[in-house]
Figure 1 (cartoon, rainbow, N blue to C red):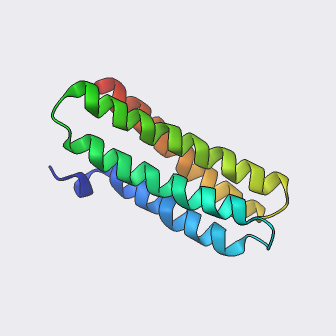
Figure 2 (cartoon, rainbow, N blue to C red; figure 1 turned 90 degrees about the horizontal axis):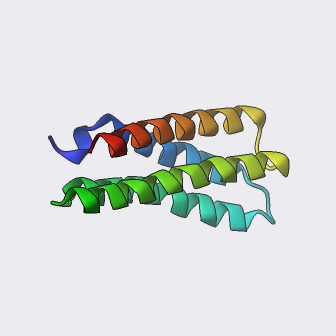
Length: 113
C-alpha cells in the first residue's frame, strides 16, 4: 500500500487544509502563530510519509513519533490562537477535532509497529 492510500495520510492532509484556512483568519500580529502552524501541519504529513518508507521499525517509529509531536503542537497552536481571540470558536473546534483524531491514529499506528 502506498502512503497516500492510508487514512492517516489523508487525515493529515485535512489538517494541512484546516491549518491553511486558520492562517488566513489570523489577524496582523499573529504571524508567529501562522508560521508555526504552517510548519507543524506540514511536518505531520512529511514525517509520516518519510517514516512509512523507512525499512527498519526503529526508524519508522522515530518518524511517526515526530509526526505525533507535530500533531500535538497543532493542538497547542489552535488553543493559543483561541486564547488570544485570534480565531473563531468553530475554526478552533474543527482544527482540534482533526488534530486530536490524528494524534490518536498516530499513537495506535506507532504502537502497532
